[in-house]
Image (cartoon, rainbow, N blue to C red):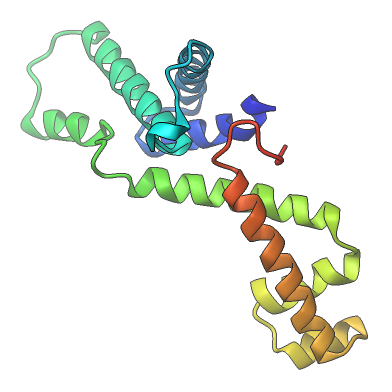
Length: 179
Protein backbone atom coordinates (compact mmCIF):
# COMPACT_ATOMS: atom_id res chain seq x y z
CA UNK A 1 0.00 0.00 0.00
CA UNK A 2 2.73 2.47 0.99
CA UNK A 3 4.72 1.64 -2.14
CA UNK A 4 1.68 2.15 -4.39
CA UNK A 5 0.98 5.47 -2.76
CA UNK A 6 4.40 7.11 -2.74
CA UNK A 7 6.60 5.41 -5.33
CA UNK A 8 5.02 7.15 -8.37
CA UNK A 9 5.76 10.53 -6.80
CA UNK A 10 9.37 9.59 -6.22
CA UNK A 11 9.80 8.32 -9.78
CA UNK A 12 8.27 11.43 -11.36
CA UNK A 13 10.36 13.68 -9.11
CA UNK A 14 13.56 11.89 -10.11
CA UNK A 15 12.64 12.09 -13.81
CA UNK A 16 11.90 15.80 -13.44
CA UNK A 17 15.41 16.18 -11.97
CA UNK A 18 16.91 14.76 -15.16
CA UNK A 19 17.16 11.02 -14.49
CA UNK A 20 16.21 8.44 -17.10
CA UNK A 21 13.11 6.38 -16.27
CA UNK A 22 15.09 3.24 -15.30
CA UNK A 23 17.45 5.28 -13.11
CA UNK A 24 14.49 7.07 -11.56
CA UNK A 25 12.95 3.69 -10.68
CA UNK A 26 16.20 2.63 -9.00
CA UNK A 27 16.47 5.88 -7.06
CA UNK A 28 12.82 5.61 -5.99
CA UNK A 29 13.48 2.09 -4.72
CA UNK A 30 16.50 3.29 -2.75
CA UNK A 31 14.49 6.15 -1.28
CA UNK A 32 11.64 3.82 -0.30
CA UNK A 33 14.03 1.41 1.43
CA UNK A 34 15.75 4.24 3.28
CA UNK A 35 12.42 5.76 4.28
CA UNK A 36 11.01 2.48 5.58
CA UNK A 37 14.14 1.72 7.58
CA UNK A 38 14.05 5.14 9.19
CA UNK A 39 10.30 4.96 9.78
CA UNK A 40 10.55 1.55 11.44
CA UNK A 41 13.43 2.82 13.57
CA UNK A 42 11.14 5.59 14.81
CA UNK A 43 13.06 8.48 13.25
CA UNK A 44 9.91 9.98 11.73
CA UNK A 45 7.81 11.71 14.35
CA UNK A 46 4.89 13.71 13.00
CA UNK A 47 4.48 15.22 16.43
CA UNK A 48 7.74 17.15 15.97
CA UNK A 49 6.12 19.15 13.16
CA UNK A 50 7.70 17.36 10.22
CA UNK A 51 5.28 16.55 7.45
CA UNK A 52 5.69 13.18 5.81
CA UNK A 53 5.96 14.69 2.35
CA UNK A 54 8.81 16.98 3.44
CA UNK A 55 10.68 14.13 5.03
CA UNK A 56 10.18 11.91 2.00
CA UNK A 57 11.28 14.74 -0.31
CA UNK A 58 14.50 15.14 1.67
CA UNK A 59 15.25 11.46 1.38
CA UNK A 60 14.48 11.47 -2.35
CA UNK A 61 16.61 14.56 -2.99
CA UNK A 62 19.53 12.96 -1.15
CA UNK A 63 19.19 9.73 -3.13
CA UNK A 64 19.10 11.69 -6.41
CA UNK A 65 22.20 13.67 -5.40
CA UNK A 66 24.00 10.48 -4.48
CA UNK A 67 23.01 8.87 -7.78
CA UNK A 68 24.35 11.87 -9.71
CA UNK A 69 27.59 11.79 -7.74
CA UNK A 70 28.03 8.07 -8.46
CA UNK A 71 27.29 8.71 -12.12
CA UNK A 72 29.81 11.55 -12.25
CA UNK A 73 32.51 9.41 -10.59
CA UNK A 74 32.03 6.57 -13.07
CA UNK A 75 32.13 8.81 -16.14
CA UNK A 76 35.35 8.96 -18.06
CA UNK A 77 37.47 11.87 -16.97
CA UNK A 78 37.20 14.43 -19.71
CA UNK A 79 37.91 18.12 -19.66
CA UNK A 80 34.39 19.35 -18.95
CA UNK A 81 33.08 22.36 -20.71
CA UNK A 82 31.68 25.10 -18.52
CA UNK A 83 28.10 24.47 -19.61
CA UNK A 84 28.46 20.74 -18.78
CA UNK A 85 29.36 21.56 -15.21
CA UNK A 86 26.56 24.09 -14.93
CA UNK A 87 23.95 21.70 -16.30
CA UNK A 88 25.11 18.90 -13.99
CA UNK A 89 24.78 21.03 -10.88
CA UNK A 90 21.52 22.54 -12.09
CA UNK A 91 19.99 19.06 -12.20
CA UNK A 92 20.74 18.28 -8.57
CA UNK A 93 17.59 18.93 -6.55
CA UNK A 94 17.81 21.79 -4.10
CA UNK A 95 16.05 21.34 -0.77
CA UNK A 96 15.11 25.00 -0.72
CA UNK A 97 13.43 24.89 -4.15
CA UNK A 98 10.51 22.53 -3.71
CA UNK A 99 8.21 23.67 -6.52
CA UNK A 100 8.79 20.52 -8.58
CA UNK A 101 8.29 18.25 -5.60
CA UNK A 102 5.16 20.10 -4.48
CA UNK A 103 3.69 19.94 -7.99
CA UNK A 104 4.36 16.19 -8.28
CA UNK A 105 3.03 15.59 -4.78
CA UNK A 106 -0.18 17.55 -5.32
CA UNK A 107 -0.84 16.05 -8.76
CA UNK A 108 -0.37 12.52 -7.47
CA UNK A 109 -2.47 13.01 -4.34
CA UNK A 110 -5.25 14.63 -6.33
CA UNK A 111 -5.35 11.78 -8.83
CA UNK A 112 -5.59 9.22 -6.01
CA UNK A 113 -8.24 11.26 -4.22
CA UNK A 114 -10.30 11.63 -7.40
CA UNK A 115 -10.08 7.89 -8.04
CA UNK A 116 -11.23 7.23 -4.47
CA UNK A 117 -14.22 9.57 -4.79
CA UNK A 118 -15.25 7.89 -8.04
CA UNK A 119 -15.45 4.61 -6.12
CA UNK A 120 -17.35 6.18 -3.22
CA UNK A 121 -20.00 8.21 -5.04
CA UNK A 122 -22.63 7.09 -7.52
CA UNK A 123 -21.96 7.64 -11.20
CA UNK A 124 -24.22 10.70 -11.54
CA UNK A 125 -22.58 12.49 -8.62
CA UNK A 126 -19.10 11.74 -9.97
CA UNK A 127 -20.06 12.75 -13.48
CA UNK A 128 -21.72 15.99 -12.29
CA UNK A 129 -18.56 16.89 -10.40
CA UNK A 130 -16.40 16.11 -13.42
CA UNK A 131 -18.50 18.14 -15.83
CA UNK A 132 -19.02 21.12 -13.56
CA UNK A 133 -15.83 21.34 -11.46
CA UNK A 134 -13.18 19.77 -13.67
CA UNK A 135 -14.34 20.46 -17.21
CA UNK A 136 -15.92 23.73 -16.07
CA UNK A 137 -19.17 23.31 -17.93
CA UNK A 138 -21.98 25.58 -16.83
CA UNK A 139 -24.16 24.05 -14.12
CA UNK A 140 -27.20 24.19 -16.41
CA UNK A 141 -25.35 22.35 -19.20
CA UNK A 142 -24.07 19.67 -16.81
CA UNK A 143 -27.55 19.26 -15.32
CA UNK A 144 -29.12 18.90 -18.75
CA UNK A 145 -26.51 16.36 -19.90
CA UNK A 146 -27.12 14.25 -16.81
CA UNK A 147 -30.87 14.71 -16.51
CA UNK A 148 -30.68 16.33 -13.09
CA UNK A 149 -31.41 19.73 -11.62
CA UNK A 150 -28.88 22.53 -11.41
CA UNK A 151 -29.14 22.36 -7.63
CA UNK A 152 -28.26 18.64 -7.75
CA UNK A 153 -25.08 19.54 -9.68
CA UNK A 154 -24.15 22.08 -7.00
CA UNK A 155 -24.80 19.54 -4.26
CA UNK A 156 -22.73 16.90 -6.07
CA UNK A 157 -19.81 19.32 -6.38
CA UNK A 158 -20.05 20.27 -2.72
CA UNK A 159 -20.14 16.62 -1.55
CA UNK A 160 -17.21 15.55 -3.73
CA UNK A 161 -15.10 18.60 -2.80
CA UNK A 162 -15.73 17.96 0.89
CA UNK A 163 -14.63 14.34 0.52
CA UNK A 164 -11.59 15.34 -1.56
CA UNK A 165 -10.53 17.69 1.23
CA UNK A 166 -10.83 14.89 3.80
CA UNK A 167 -8.85 12.46 1.67
CA UNK A 168 -6.23 15.06 0.81
CA UNK A 169 -5.69 15.91 4.48
CA UNK A 170 -5.36 12.22 5.35
CA UNK A 171 -2.73 11.61 2.68
CA UNK A 172 0.14 12.98 4.78
CA UNK A 173 -0.47 10.12 7.19
CA UNK A 174 1.50 7.05 5.97
CA UNK A 175 -1.27 4.77 7.23
CA UNK A 176 -4.11 6.93 5.88
CA UNK A 177 -7.24 5.76 4.13
CA UNK A 178 -6.13 6.11 0.51
CA UNK A 179 -4.85 3.10 -1.41
